[in-house]
Amino acid sequence: MASLLTEIDHVAIAVRDLDAAIAWYAEVLGATVVHREVVESDGVDEALLRVAESYVQLLTPTRDDSPVAKYLEQRGEGLHHVAYRVDDCAVALAAVKASGARVIDQTPRPGSRGTIVAFVHPKASFGTLIELVEDPHR
Ligand code: CO
Picture (cartoon, rainbow, N blue to C red):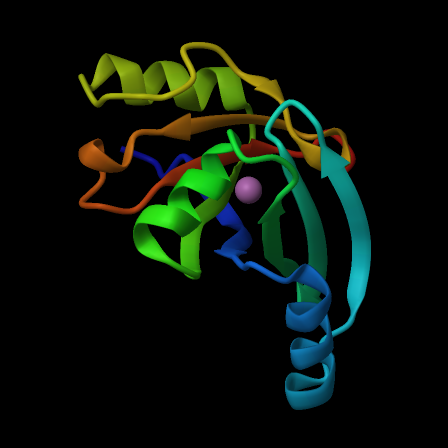
């Protein structure tokens, strides 16, 4: 089968203090923010740092009932999910579902930056939350 995944879109890291994390990436690694966005539906504030054609996405919760807040509480700071680019999120999600793998999103939904996204359940993917990202602007 041909790969559904065309590139790594971003690696997402959950942090408690977004400003401190942004400052650390800038001072220690020289990585700078290219996009900031609050995604109200997910309860997150995100900063994207460009790394070649991909991003590191620093994430912090905007409210206590955000999934990222629960993640920080249970697992602490660190790797939250890996996001892969796909040509067509609906097609990729349908293929994942057809394989029998458990998904979080039954249908694609809006992500940040005007992307279309869907999440695959970490129980289906050896413990890593996977995001499928279609970027209509690429
Ligand atoms: Co993401």
